[in-house]
Image (cartoon, rainbow, N blue to C red; front, side, top):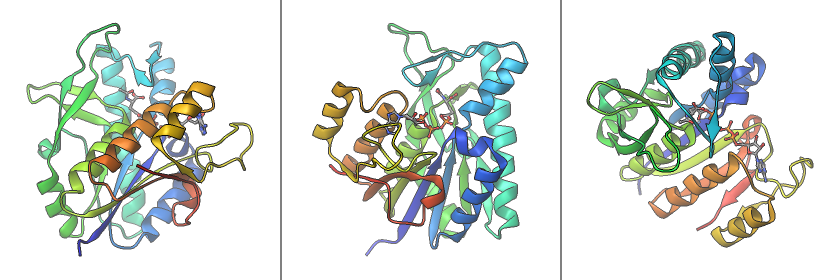
Length: 257
Ligand SMILES: Nc1ncnc2c1ncn2[C@@H]1O[C@H](COP(=O)(O)OP(=O)(O)O)[C@@H](O)[C@H]1O
Ligand SMILES: CC(=O)N[C@@H](CCC(=O)OP(=O)(O)O)C(=O)O
């Protein structure tokens, strides 16, 4: 039987607030066995950009990333957010190593081609170095991945953190029995976004399509679920979407093939 590995993705609303981040790090530190943490930080990037007089624009859940915005996201994701998390995990006895996709060529991407929209310096993942990550993990290191990748020609590229989580989980599924958990500020995928207790316990692709058509599932939840189905189809054992403070409970929405 293959060894188990948990990949946790934590979004910007949780990492932005000290209290919710600390609780998440406590819970993450308590997860037994091999694990990887993937973080976002979109809200912190938007805040700093505003303070610097740079306007933020999102299209289909992705940030339009011009040269100035790329500097901001590199500072925020690769610097502040990543290093705060790494230090917080070290304080909890977790031997964390912060990585962007450029470090040890962990995630190579290609600049998103311009079609209807020019996203600028946004990368689509092409290759994840699962072998290197696997070696680190087997040595007892806990990778903490920032949502930045590189193209191999010297350019850093901004990449959606849910995509980083999905692609990393897929690549590591060649080596481990992977559970992927997307955690955020709600209890799961909700039937009614205003009713916290309307969690959909299981979700199939057909139900997903139906909910999108009805407007029940929208915005950032659409790419999150697309990444979830893709991960399951590519060998990830289990995908769950749940409340950040409940990553060690069996609640939330379980994604089905
Ligand atoms: N049916 C739904 N249930 C829960 N959240 C939903 C739903 N439809 C849309 N959302 C939105 O999706 C958001 C999560 O996606 P996103 O903003 O990308 O999160 P993250 O910060 O975790 O990356 C939630 O904050 C919520 O506003
Ligand atoms: C290309 C792109 O959109 N990148 C994202 C990366 C951060 C992210 O995904 O953060 P959350 O998980 O907090 O949303 C962005 O800059 O917002």
